[in-house]
Image 1 (cartoon, rainbow, N blue to C red):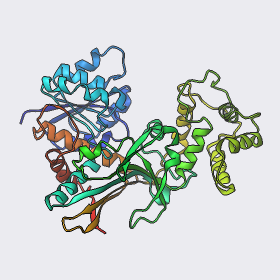
Image 2 (cartoon, rainbow, N blue to C red):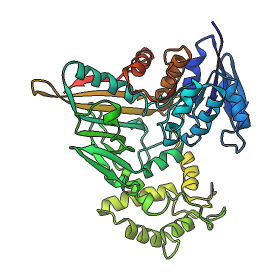
Image 3 (spheres, rainbow, N blue to C red):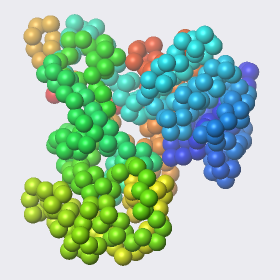
Image 4 (cartoon, one colour):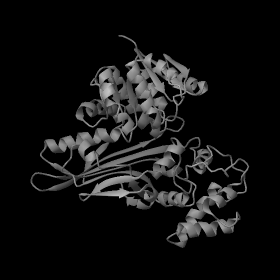
Amino acid sequence: MAPKKILLLGSGFVAAPCAEYLARDPANTLTVACRTLSSASALCAPLPRASPLVLDVAATDPTALEAAVAAHDLVISLVPYTHHAAVVQAAIKGKTHVVTTSYISPALHALDGAARAAGIVVLNEAGLDPGIDHLSAVKIIGDVHAKGGKVREFHLQCGALPAPDCADNPLGYKFSWSPRGGLLALLNSASFLANGAVTHVAGADLMASAQPCAIASFAPALEAFPNRDSVPFRAFYRIPEAHTVVRGTLRYVGFAAFMAALGKTGWLAADVKEWLVDGLEWREATQRAVGASASDEDALIARIKEVCAFPSDSESARIISGMRWMGLFSPEKLVVRGGTLLDTLCAHLEVLMKYQPGERDLVLLQQKFVVEWADGKEETITATLEEYGTPGGHSAMARTVGVPCGIATQLVLDGMFSTPGVHAPYSKEFCDPIREKLESEGLRLTERIL
């Protein structure tokens, strides 16, 4: 069998399960590239036929990236999505296939014609959400249509959470992936279809839009807020009959209100603040961010209450206590990252809200389909994934993103997916082969009829 050369860009949270899956095939050789040799080497160390490479995807000069990509049959881009277009441009030049776990951005969509002309497959959305969610949705919707039914409502809720016994901080949350990416996602605007009407939610209002969300057999209280733009999925999933299409993000109850308060007090601001310098006290930064008259705790709390207008004394006490736990009223000196309040807070939370040894995370995903059958009868179908991480092993987040990415990569290499262009798995042709292999890895959604 001819050897297949794979370039893996990124060695972060989700890379290891992907690399391990690909290492099973003796025809595969793997190059792991990232900015630091130690990170790439650590990922390669336990794997056969794997070698590290120092490469900065964000470098102004694309020469090194283009050379690395051209030397391989396929490149997996697990770097931030803002760099995917540069990777695909290099892949078009080198006639190298591409797999990502990110949504198809406008910049990637614009490269579809060039990718087709180059004869390369650019397969995106091959992770968890987006990724595993598509596999189940396409299957169930296809089954319903085959039986003469219509999907009137489609709901998806997905969250990467601490297991309930590990959700022991005021936010009920810990980071199993990039804190910056996690916090920035809370500032995205969102749109969804509800009862035939499109609803838009501005990024500044996203946290305030969170609603309680119950998942059968899961006891802790959850809430959900809309995730990006759900409206195109009526077309992507081929359900023109649907009057409601909502895709959302799950968190434990109380998270959204806490994050809304951090936003109102300025701590999620991503612009550079000239006054934000090393040696500044956390309480002084909070004073400047929120516009308080002084940096003592009483003055900070009074101003925060004024800015946030909490709905009750108990909610005020809960969130202010959480801010105190985060150290925002502390005289300790902060270390600035990136010149922004957001990045400085992220660096702090990376330590404060990380998983401790022996703790495990949880990926919880549920889809709900309200179906109308030909005889007029209505039925609700749910499909649920409840996957826990392994203490000392892979997190649930790493496994549910990395394994489908590895499977999709292998299928491209094996020629199962060979139509050139920029793709996402919205059809049976893509979804069925990935889903079947994913289920053999123990990642299967449980379907129920309510």
